[in-house]
Each structure stands twice: as C-alpha cells, then as structure tokens.
Length: 84
Image (cartoon, rainbow, N blue to C red; front, side, top):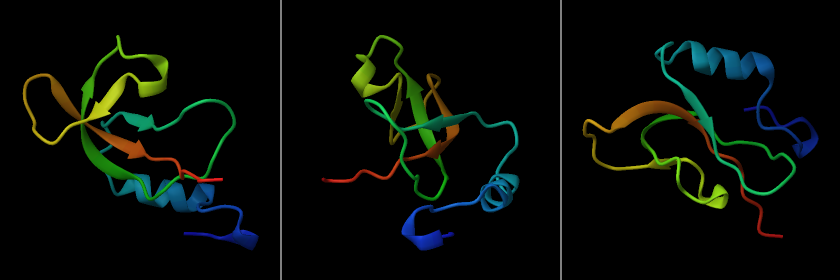
C-alpha cells in the first residue's frame, strides 16, 4: 500500500499488480454511499448476491457467507469509512 503524505492507499501500478493475481474473469464491485470518493481497502474476493431491488443506499450487491446457485464471486473494493 502506498501512503503518499497519508492521502492515498494505492497507486495504479499497485492495484494492477494485485488484480493480476486474481482470476481475470471475475466482476469488480465497489462499496459506496452518498457523494464524493474515498480510498479503498485491499481488494479481496467475496461471495455476492445480486439484489437489484434494494434501496440505493444498500447497494444492489450484498456479501453473503454461503454459496448457492444465486451467488457469485467478485472482487470487492471496500471503501474506507471515516467516522468524522
């Protein structure tokens, strides 16, 4: 992880290297809510379920613990949540 003056967690090169080590056919999702942008934590592979009818603030993809015929693997970029 990069931390140039405490501002950024990853550079493009670092992110590319991490993503190269993962299965190349996986979709990528990000966590988010409201406006603006944040740093994100280490990308990881998670089991997800698509729930398109969720309210916008809950996101259309949800992490689940158990796999079944309605779940899939995805690379998640969870954003850093600041408690200002």
